[in-house]
Amino acid sequence: MQQTHDYKRNGTTTLFAALEVLTGKLSANAFYPKHTNIEFVDFLGRVADAHPGIELHVICDNYATHKHQNVKDWLADNPRMRLLFTPTSCSWLNMVEIFFGIITRQCRKPGTFSSVKELEETMERYIENYNQDAKPFTWTKSADYLLGKMKRKQAINTEHQLANSTQTPTRRPGRD
Image 1 (cartoon, rainbow, N blue to C red):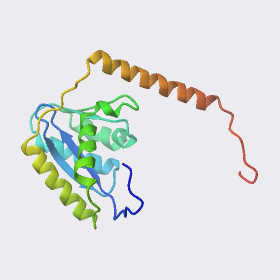
Image 2 (cartoon, rainbow, N blue to C red):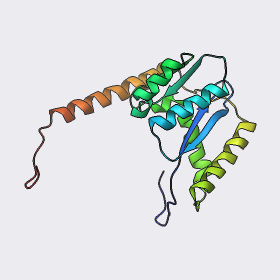
Image 3 (cartoon, rainbow, N blue to C red):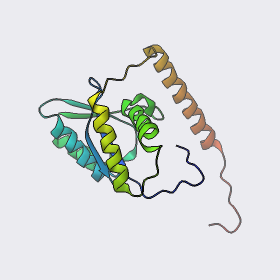
Image 4 (tube, rainbow, N blue to C red):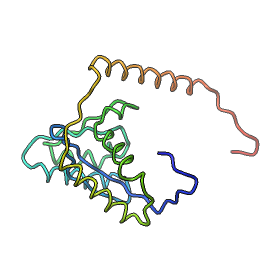
């Protein structure tokens, strides 16, 4: 998100949230100072606790944290939870990413927060209010359109990777 020239950043936070696709509500929300495998495993435990006794399918992007060995070990011990990954550069398929865009525009953008705690409290209130009238997201494009978009995006990424791999690296003087 673009900021104005006088925007002052007073810290950061990481929001993990589970979007229930049938209701549109967010659950197991948690704020962390970092986004490492340790926090992600803790978040997965919160999701499991929030939805006991049922099989869970969690859609994630391809961030390396989500595929860390600690995550794999936790999943091996919790077989009712399965991670599914969006194709590379297609995180727009992950509906919770849509919500993160909404919360950025409607909750965070209007203000500058004096502390991380104030930001987190504001986002918590926003999520509580959002959940009171939550509705599931509905795709407005056909499956064929979405699959075509995904294939085009993958083709562009492949072309980009091939172009970068065929370039000969150059050395700058004075660099080892």
